[in-house]
Length: 113
Image 1 (cartoon, rainbow, N blue to C red):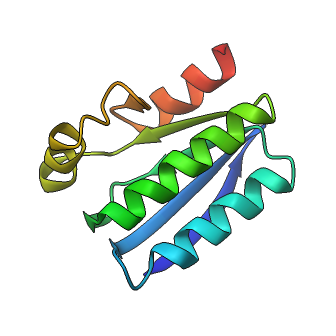
Image 2 (cartoon, helix red, strand yellow; image 1 turned 135 degrees about the vertical axis):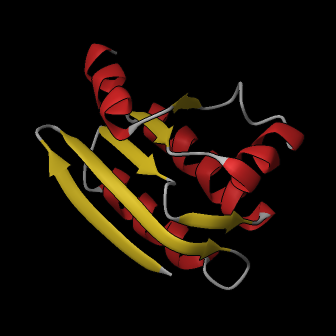
Image 3 (cartoon, rainbow, N blue to C red; image 1 turned 45 degrees about the vertical axis):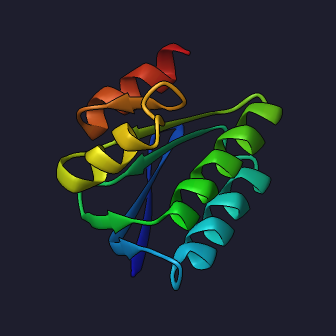
């Protein structure tokens, strides 16, 4: 798994490439939590290059979302499609997260919040 971070003004865009599974979920979680602890209040997690996410990866997202809210921040997801979207649907995660179709949509929604 490859992790890429960039800034879009005041929004951090966090992209993971590959699979977020039992092997890589800890690295994914650690980096996401580090961004939150650094004070990044608006984070977009872009899934356009993710082929699979396991329950460990979903758990990392839940923890990151809660940690972000505790610090008066907001997390948004984008690029969730195909099999990854099916896993979100099956696990009933669609109502838990702010999910936007594109990175630009997610950035705009976070700036409005």
